[in-house]
Length: 136
Image (spheres, rainbow, N blue to C red):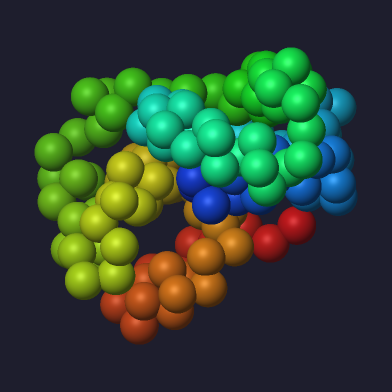
């Protein structure tokens, strides 16, 4: 099975769902190999208050859910991705959503699939020939 790269959109939804189906799909017993650039952790921390509001969890419950999610994902240092791969990812993302460049670069680097529910991102990437999306 190919590596699966989890983007911010998906991780946010998994946490905001308060324990719904999406988080169950990311369960540690799953055979999926989940990866993400370290940038994901920064994005989740940046939006902690929004996550608390959306999930209706207590701060302690949210932190527990975050711990489970973070333990399930292998974080890859962005500096391990070759410059040429970054350039290719930037070309794909530059007029779609540049914040997703790290996720697309990691997907290309790992020869994996991108797991996102961001339909605008998917449409923009598909228009440029990128079609490496994971569907559970």
